[in-house]
Image (cartoon, rainbow, N blue to C red):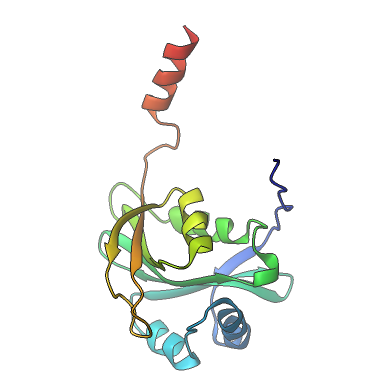
Length: 172
């Protein structure tokens, strides 16, 4: 069975600004069973270490990400792509933008929590080289659901020596 790939949608990724909030709230509402409210976004974004970014196609916000800066890591708090534009590379472009902020000298990983029932997000992050590293029991305030802690670790260069050594062994 061949998987049908949707065409990649190019987006402009920029910092979130106040006037983005209505579109961000709409994406949030359409994406989650227990959505954040405007006060949740405002409270979070008022913190010095909290950053919001959006993906824009034309004049329309089609995705957003809220993350925190910590000493050695970035922590994704909230992330969603408009449902009708999922599987078009928008989320991948946003993750790549965040990964580009990592370095071996400072922040070396990205972490986030994913609901155990959110298989779509688990698969998306797994495809983006995140790994589930632990289970957080009864993690959410709004339900008794567990979460998976998923992490991405910075790699100095994307082609590892182990992989190329394996290929050389197989080839000759």
